[in-house]
Length: 259
Image (cartoon, rainbow, N blue to C red; front, side, top):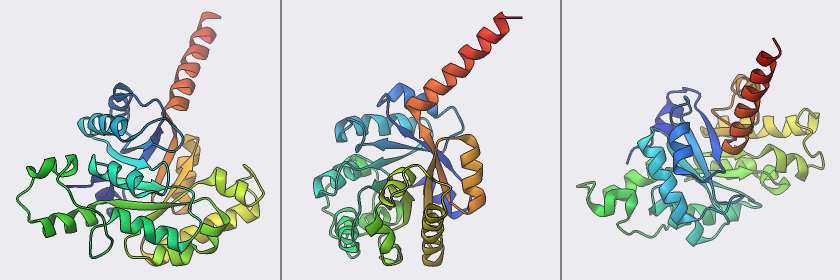
């Protein structure tokens, strides 16, 4: 099991991805022709569950995209099913404590790091894609699976240094909207307190040798994010990219018609 995104991160290639809200394999295939490196299947804010996510993962794999998933909640089933159907990484929202992150590690990582249950599934071709022993497969999966708690609450921010220090945490995904709301400054991303929070998370990740992902809605935001020191940037949602892309073409067509 290879994780192309993790390899790109280790080479500091500054990968760009987007969220999947359309839940369409065809849309995922189209995204694979755009220059994006990864896609996040959203099981928190979209109606997608593990069966849908599996079909979207297939489309991503066929299109050269690395498929991550955002889990719907902190339950064992929500974590385990997405990994068993082939997710190369998980983003875990609504974290409030170090103990919750440790619980997620137990669900997502095999022993000796965690307590993930083992079963031949799609992740390893139902056992036919490798000649490794069970122990070797577990070690490979632990190394290849990105586990990214989402820092979007005051509690997660207050304990961010402890969170990134945990073995099994590969990085942090910053949810700027919810974090700014939690700080009482909804959407005020340029506010000093919000900027200081972002900087604290980046610093904690850097000092722990972990990756830091950030979400933005614009192309300029991607460039600014990499300039600020983030390792990977998530640019919008496929639904918004579709609307903005078509809207710009319609506006261009109408402008051309006026000539």
